[in-house]
Length: 178
Image (cartoon, rainbow, N blue to C red; front, side, top):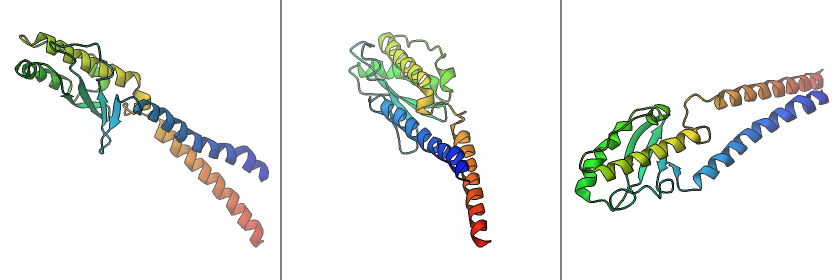
């Protein structure tokens, strides 16, 4: 019985503890760079400010935030910038082009610049593309994909652990009562 405990239960318990700890550490390392955060509803928000420092519109940078929930783009929101408001407003209509699309599909969307606001439009497009590529590249650590085996693996390991522990405790209890 002690061999069962040493060979099966202890390694299984160690795996159950190690997987969430290591994935949590990797997840937190991504959150330290001001590019990624989550809102209180669990929506992933990617800020392109650090990703697109060299992407310039007509008067400067045009960062955006990309909201992703369940692997799909919910919305894209323009952040504070120095663009001329009337031109930027015309250009910002393109931000709806990615709404509702899966991240993988959204990275392939071709959006045309708005005539008369070409610099601002192109800068917004480049910001969104960079943010989506970042999300796709880091999808496993960010939880962007909806088809993850992680919950299944944890559930199977937890059931196996509880079954082994239950069997062990049942046999031990049975020996004491006999």
